[in-house]
Image 1 (spheres, rainbow, N blue to C red):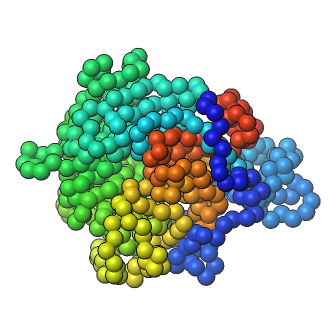
Image 2 (cartoon, rainbow, N blue to C red):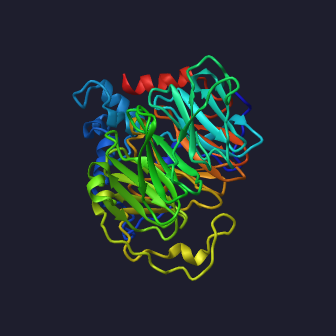
Image 3 (cartoon, rainbow, N blue to C red):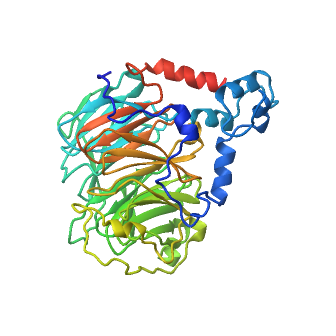
Amino acid sequence: MAPNMRSRKKRHNCEDIDTAHKTSASQEPNDNNNYLDHEISQLTRLRSFPHELLSRAMPGRSKLPVSTVKMLVGREGNYSGKGRFSSADGCHVLSRYLPVNGPWMVDYMKSRAYTSQFSSDGSLLVAGFQESQIRIYDVNGGWKVLKDILAKSLRWTVTDTSLSPDQHYLVYASMSPVVHIVNIGSATTDSVANVTEIHDGLDFSRNDDEEEFGIFSIKFSTDGRELVAASSDEAIYVYDLMENKLSLRIPAHTSDVNTVCFADETGHLIYSGSDDTLCKVWDRRCFISRGQAAGVLMGHLEGVAFIDSRGDGRHFISNGKDQTTKLWDIRKMSNATYKPRLRDFEWDYRWMEYPSHARNMKHPFDQSVATYRGHSVLRTLIRCHFSPQYSTGQKYIYTGSSDGSVYIYDLVSGDEVAKLDHNRQPVRDCTWHPVYPMIVTASWDGVVSSWEFPGSGEAPPPRKRKSLKRALYY
């Protein structure tokens, strides 16, 4: 493990997280009580709140959050009648110990880091860099580089990477219609395109395409049989890996499509976001007959930079260039679109600061459930995510920021519960370990860093993090 890279700001502790939420984040339209009054708040409660009988384990107040000691005593006394922690009990404990200590350096490259992604089991980390390089790390093996990939025919940067569900293949995209796929299970560590290994090209263009385009976002389906891609030619693409051909092209938006993802494991629904400020929902079961989106969601005043699905087929979050993250329920979608002309200024997010007076502007027909503010989406397509279901019950959302920080917001209250402040360049992407309290950031200063809950001295070995899981659930 590389030397400890201490943050310039005072570190949080678990008591700070429980009792002193910051108030820079806001929610709309619930500004009066700053609390999300929506079905998703109840779903979050069910996933991350402890059994009510555990609060009776010790005398005194039974208000939430219930202390870890009280919950452990309640478990030993079998107050819940289950003899063990439920998944919600475990989430309540783990979600209090946020990964705010550090950072520790995982790697440093003389190139901007654009993407970071844990595998579904957390054993691997994928990081993509601008100068044609992608690295896959063994998380439990001291961050050893398992695969050092030198990309083929890269244009501008690695815009996105996606790991197959079985963790055998990796696809990477750039500002080109050709996506490359690499077998990461081979014995070769140094994977140089078409020198030491073949990086097969998957062509997303059509024969009648006159102009080439770039791909901003690409994702595997849950079954690993398809890829969905967002492109600069205002379209969404679906590629059938079994047939090795492009199966669907949707002329989806009126500007660059910056982000796309499957809504859930069925693969029927697709979410997309564009510089035309709109989020759209596509139902492939009826697309051929209708030829249009199942619905449109309005609320962002500037382009949509990134979308992350909650995985339930109903809810997702989006980062917008209007410097907000928004939470959506697709049951609020409509077929009408209205783009208000509220902007009275010229602005380009790639090199200009967002005007301060514009931060309070609101879309007159905002269909979002909640809005979170505090971070900044400038210079690049900053990414946001739900926190893991296993360890937190998805009770938080977190996002990179152009100010070099990572912001963590409470999904229900809207409060900023933590800010990971270290980098001097934008943190374009960040990823939360699916089990352990750990976040890895990818920054434009070339640093890939790890933030964890235990953080004094050297980073703890993986076996200690595993023991935390064992103590909570068994």
